[in-house]
Amino acid sequence: MRWLVTFVIVLAMLGPAAAAPLQVLTRDGGPIAGPAIRHGESFAQARGTGVSVIQRPFSGLYGEIMIGFVTGRETADVLIFPAAWLPDFAPYLSPVPQALIDSPLVQGIHPAYRDTLMRWQGQWKAVTLDGDLHMGAYRRDLFEMPEAQAAFERAYGRPLAPPRSWTEYGELAAFFRDWPEPAGGALAGSFEASAEGGQRLWYLFSHAAAYTAHPDHPGHFFFDPDTMAPEIDNPAWRRALREYLAAVATAEAKTEGGSGLDSHGVRSAFALGGAAMAIDWTDIGLVATDPDRSAITSDVGFFVLPGSQEVWNPEAKRWDSLGAPRPVPFLAFGGWIAAVPLGSRNTDAAWDFIAWMAAPERANEDVTDGASGFNPYRLSQIEDFERWAGLMGERQAREYLGVLRESLSSPQTARDLRIPGYPAYMAALDRWIGRVIAGELPPAEALAGAAVEWDQITDRLGRASQRRHYREAMGLEAQAP
Image (cartoon, rainbow, N blue to C red):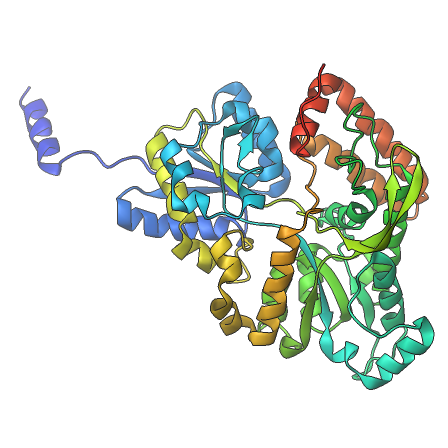
């Protein structure tokens, strides 16, 4: 027994056992995982609790998290995942502590990213770390060339300026595709993602948002909110898909092997001066103005996602005129959020780490480094002109922040799809759109096929419950059964 007494004495001399490190599960790579690792190191130094970041490929992240939930064998204390997955994950997550909800940290998040994306079925389940929306970028030097201005006005009867509508956007893309670039070589009209697995669906959604946002019939973006019949094969979506494909075609000469660009390729290729315009997440502002990554740093301008003068009336089955182009900004993807599973071994420390990571002094670094995968989401970030001017230059910062503020304050800002079964819906649509891009199917046939598959998914998950969830996601009042 002498060895046992000695062991107890040694333990007493060492003090309390070190707490097990927190396990944080998220996607792999520099974006998203990078900030978690960096802030985990500073958290460990400040709190004395280590943080181990488990990285998984994006394609397998949803499945691994869900399998852990349904088997009861999840190992992570903190999950960082896309906001669109919250409807599926919410039943397995701990509620956000009320003190954190009431704190300046949470109340300082822009309402567009707080009030919807952090809640499901009226319960606070996660904390936003990222704010996503699509915006436009353009080469100011090309738009300000006197020769280009004169040629464009002769061709289209209006001044050369950033697009207000998708029709104008398409005309501009075609014009610059055919315009001889001053430095020589083929100039793309506009860059948009079209590569498989490269976020192409959100670019299509950005085109569709303006055509589906009827002011008298809200919520008809993806489904009929009364019946859950898919809307993705109606004339608005067919028009959006045709125009998206036309925009992608204006860049074919600038993409290797015709495989198209992913979203990272869009912002990188645009920063090298390869296109007159681009549609992308707001990361493009930092990449295109970074002298280490861009050849057009002082020649970049930004515009709100184009809109439309016409909108599809889903009840009357006709196009209605709005009198003037109306922008419909789109919260593409929504952003990344952090949550704590019910099975976390240390719930208090897990929420403490999330609050640490989301604190303004660290969040401000994340949204301004251009490589974190996190975009502005706090009210203070969107008003911090001096910080952005120091990174981009005054003119670029003023325009960039102006686009963010206008997009987030617009009464017509469109929400992304966010219902149970989201990955299944997205995978089905992406598969059919891929067949169009590959030249196997015409757009109308592909959208019709995707709509049939969406109906099957809805029936499998329960049409009544999916209708209730969809109405909540679209900000509509609950409907009687």
